[in-house]
Length: 147
Image 1: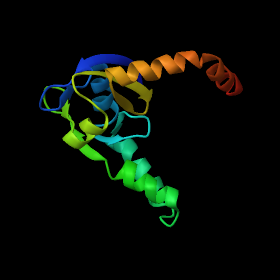
Image 2: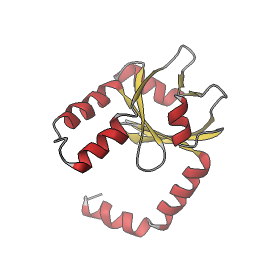
Image 3: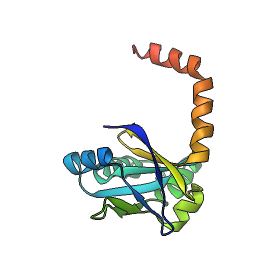
Image 4: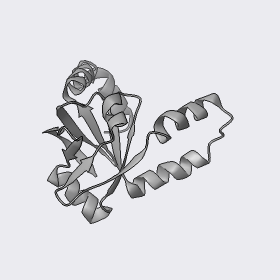
């Protein structure tokens, strides 16, 4: 499982280094392939290929006649790109995804269990500040789960 957060930079070609902690998990439990796509929160999400296959399988069962499903497929699935990890532990993020997530220089990689979120640092700071302000609501949800 991916956990923790790491500050990195994205180079002018759009390459980012995957933190060694995350790379070790990928290579031990999965392989060197990740699928990166956009999400509704303004960041990118990197899935190990095996986890992405589960998403595709479930998405293929959805009715495309529903507007919400069509919107989901157009946004989330259509943006998905396979980004293999190179020998230096980096992945190349396609320009369109970098633009959508506003990735310019300073980034944050966040482990969120089965996936890795890739944030522009300024967006991350906004999101984490909001989350900290809503800590009481989060406590209620966690208590309801028995945590």
